[in-house]
Image 1 (tube, rainbow, N blue to C red):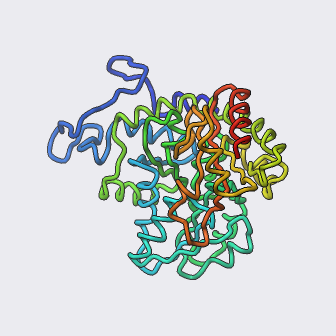
Image 2 (tube, helix red, strand yellow):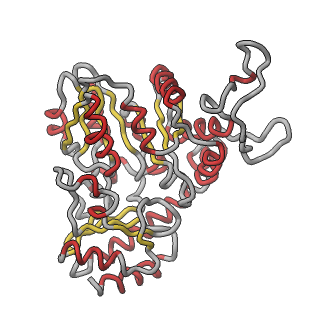
Length: 380
């Protein structure tokens, strides 16, 4: 089936007992068993497995082209679970422009447990190869990155990783692109991670995370950790994300169409020093982006001439763009990463330019959004 059909039907057959079209929300913690060691349909306890969460997990696997999907209470819970497969002394190579929460987890928390991290420019194949060591067990990519929207060639990165002794796992955070725009597993990634809070949920009403992969053995290890650690997604949240996924292709097309027009508008503004959008011809990896993504997505970053104060004035002056963290909802959001989502990188090599503004372009009328940005930029 094509993607649009999978988004609506994968893992979500009508209930065989009563014909309900929508997946039921199974608000239960435990299940009656048919005998000792004989759980009915494999359900024992909802931390281990819940029918609503299973429907979401099966849908995620289908959308990414994997054999398994696992749903978590947040994107950070999913990220943490992947790293729990490692041991003290293991090395991780991550991009040098990652989400602030990812950097905080890696640098401030997991280092204390003996893991070693190198943050490198993964858009350069040779640079990535040089960052690998005999102890490297995971290569962690965001593409496009948050917030600088750098694009890594996943296929090229996979070739580097697969030729390295010890064969590290290649993990791609696909939150910004979603499986509708980009399919990392088909390009050689071992695992895909999502913050489902963003585009997959799509309505700013739920927090969730996901891991998807192809190798059943790897899936068993991660499912064991999911159950043992317990950072699982609840049934109501699973239902909300399933509902959001049904409109994912339609929403992503509108997000991107709006973003392309807004990017063109921003490129013409005199006080915008740099526009960052993956499908804009000024983007340093525009060729890679157009090769491995369906379109440019709904995220835009731009840097203002006058720095921090100018960025704050613009972000606080919009009327339709809501000043808020997060992204990927139907409504447009604006933020200043250096003071908000990426504050944890302050003073590190990953520190964000104080004049950078990040937009999550929603699905409102694009003329209204441009008018809002125009009046705000006049106050910069």
